[in-house]
Image (cartoon, rainbow, N blue to C red):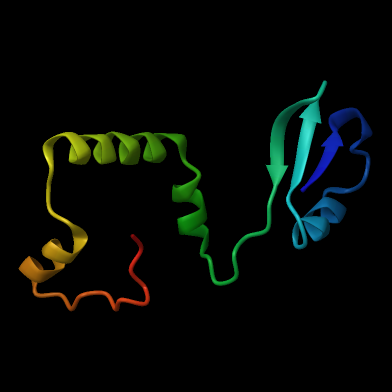
Length: 95
């Protein structure tokens, strides 16, 4: 990960974007991080990126996870079973 102080970040944005293909670039102001330039994963679409970085969406997801831990709920596998959707393959499952 490369760190660049805002006052020293004089290269064009395109240069930092090219660098981000190899490693993330963290922009700091007086030593504190204020922004990052990070490569987009191959195959990612615009909607996934926009949703995945939206603070309101992330807050909703966290509240949902907390509620699930406290009160329980259906696993994704059980939901798939109830909806008649084929279960994910074991290779793709996250634990």
